[in-house]
Length: 92
Image 1: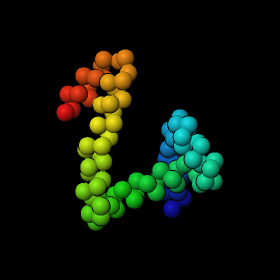
Image 2: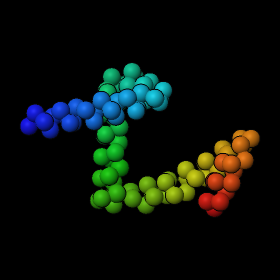
Image 3: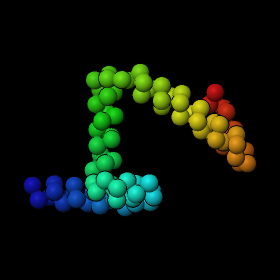
């Protein structure tokens, strides 16, 4: 049992290091007083349950497959980087 807890703790520390790279995650952690790893894990579990039980699955698939690419496409058009333009406009 100790070996399992050590592995869980190791991966928790690694995830915390990765999430610390994003300033929004640090601000969210300060605002809510909930560790970044718990917030991230909760979101992942929530999305998994939505997909698994098909609760608002259509909404989730629309957001992932249409809303985000549309947002990224408009954002790339406004930027001066043409590589992003090719990537996102090829999506459509």
